[in-house]
Amino acid sequence: MSEQEKRKLRLEIAHVLFIDIVGYTKLTTDEQSEALHELNAIVRDTETGRNAEAAGQLVFLPTGDGMALVFTGSEEEPVECALEITQALRAKPSLPLRMGIHSGPVHHVADVNQRENIAGAGINIAQRIMDCGDAGHILVSKRVADDLAQSRRWQPYLHDLGDVEVKHGMSVSVVNFYADIVGNPAPPKKFQQIREEIASSAHRGKRFPTLIAVSVAAFLLFALAIVAIIFAPAILREARSRAPGSPSAASASNVAPEKSIAVLPFESLSDDKQNSFFADGVQDEILTNLAKVAELKVISRTSVMQYKNAATRNLREIGQLLGVAHVLEGSVQRVANKVRVNAQLIDARNDAHLWAQTYDRDLADVFAIQSEIAEAIAQQLQTHLSPNEKARIEQPATTDPLAYDLRSLTTFTCEPGSSMTWRMIPMRKRACFRESACWRKPCGAIRNSCGPTASCAKRTSTCTGLALITPNSAAKWRGPLCKRQKRFSRMLAKCTG
Image 1 (tube, rainbow, N blue to C red):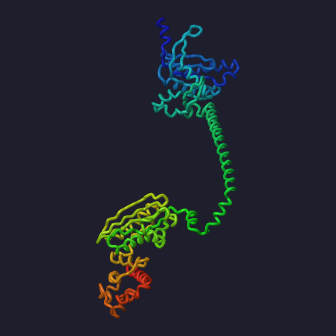
Image 2 (image 1 turned 135 degrees about the horizontal axis):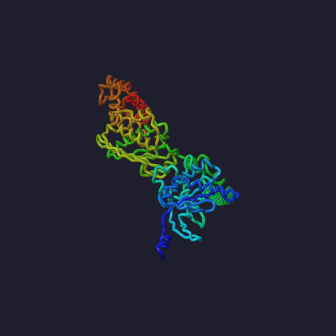
């Protein structure tokens, strides 16, 4: 094989600009000749074409209704040439052209007349890309677009169209090349048809599942109707047999609000069982603080005291019966001047722990603990605390631990099975006198004890609103004890703030 033949078979990378006259076959013979002559004049008059031809880096290939320009220099040359052709066509809008650009392998061949020619995949793909366009389009392959995108000059011109199937089932990625006065910004008709086919196919695909879904729904409704006809009499009999106001029916029909809570009695872990009222006081203060939040539904203390035994609690059942979504439970341990409070917030619908905290503080800090727990619960339930509500929660009913004991005692000794002993009486009097104006009056001279004298009894009654209790009169008090304690509790609330 000669050196010339070997050179012809050697592959080269060429940059191809394929040009086609749109509607060429509809023209008369004279019009076709005039169009080709005009196209040849425009192409050969481009500066890029003249420079490449002078450098021996351009080959013109006639294609019947257009031509292919095969550049072997820079990849930008076919793009520059396309821009120059577009600018020249602005003065001659009667010559509609479409162009395609691709870079790929080519090789030299001899045509039927034994003249040297060029062929290869680079030219074929450039023609396939051009065939995707309409009049005015300049389409480039994705490969060329990726190379041009490296230059900021060409980036505004590149607009991706996606993949399209061309001749012989080949798929090519096409990019539309246009700017303000260059190219055609409208999507080619071929791509519009593809999108319409995809949308139509998707619509047809949706119709079939929809038909199936409608059929299944109709069948299920028919089956449910049959079941209802069969079992309706039994269901009606069962409904009539049940009490119309039964608690189970009421709880099943009510859906607990998300921002609802029941504060269950806190368990006392203190060794001194006389301190059980202290744990009840902590629970009551937390419940009272939460009740000050307008967005919260808080169950009353009367309703929750029946669940005082922590060992037998079923939180899901409690939540359903009380109509709440959350419950707060905990324990209190008091040793000398120290107190430990443990609190847990639980979702009563699934027994999930949402929040838990243990507080180890001095006894005097029990008031701050109660406020902190209430604010933490409000935050966990995502409730909004107004400044007024926050201030009310942070303001304790009393700041004196002895008075706090008395408030708890007078509130909780009326529970079933509780009693009030003579040893509690002096403590009650001391707490009242300590925080009341009576401390600075004649009754203040009594201090820690008061003898059973008529004058002392009279002054004590004036001070506390109660008759003085002595060992001799204590037995007479047991009947109306709760009524008197409540009266004393109201007085003490006014006395201690």
